[in-house]
Length: 74
Image (cartoon, rainbow, N blue to C red; front, side, top):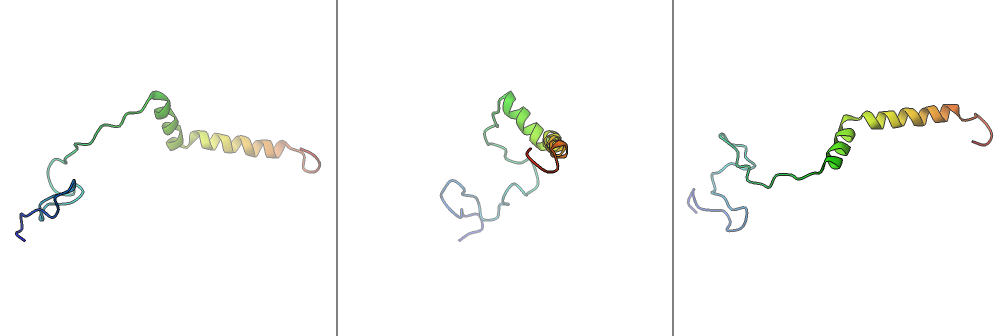
């Protein structure tokens, strides 16, 4: 096998000496489709990543538990 010969003939074929996962020098080959997301999805993910809403929910749950009676029905 020569050094420029392809490893496979499939979708992921590349020359034997090429880098993998765009780890080499130069501009990366970003030929994938752009991600499409609507505004609702973007907002939900932003809240999840910021951690603000989860913290607020936890605070509310703790406050409810504090306000419940210590013994008896709740």
